[in-house]
Length: 252
Image 1: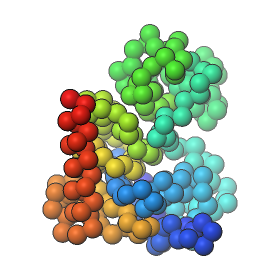
Image 2: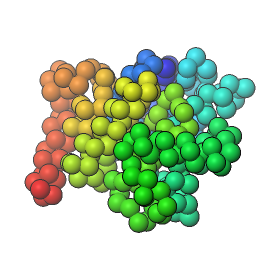
Image 3: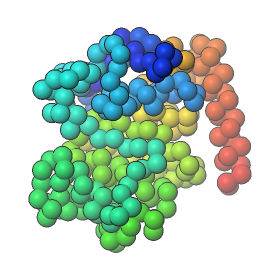
Image 4: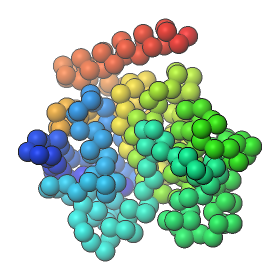
């Protein structure tokens, strides 16, 4: 479960997040949409513990993580984070990348970690043959699949997805969305995703919210995104879908 209450964050006097409130129940998926500079990435980094908020509360599984406390490490090690660029280690093979979390977070032996990595590759439909390859040898979409497997290998309760389909063609975007939904439904993962991709948002989400100039201005079901009843949301969704149609036409 993720609960955010009255979250505020500023940089050099500029407010990036203002009184942000939301809650995600265990095993549910919230997708936050919004334009560049809306505060989406800062929000995710606050939840991940990479940024310290100026005010407000962040509770993960009943434990506060927005302040220096004994709960911080125990809560944060139950979080998986899938970065926008996948952030795989270039000097490690694919299976070593996936085994990194079990070794460093779960304190497993190398043998145990490699077994966990192989299991997660199978669960997510990744061929064991790519395990010995290095990240540069696989496609962008495959690297994102590996990043999801690495996040799952840490046995998380929560996974944060930062623009998981950015840079992917429509076919592979759907594949990544399917992997994310599988994590949520098959493993009772609580998911928070930030994205510009409206089609992806509707496939992944149980609920969608929009962040605008650091404030959450709307939330609703994926179905309600078609008629949000909010001018700013409707304008944003229209502009994003128009851009995606052009991209689909160019890559078809």
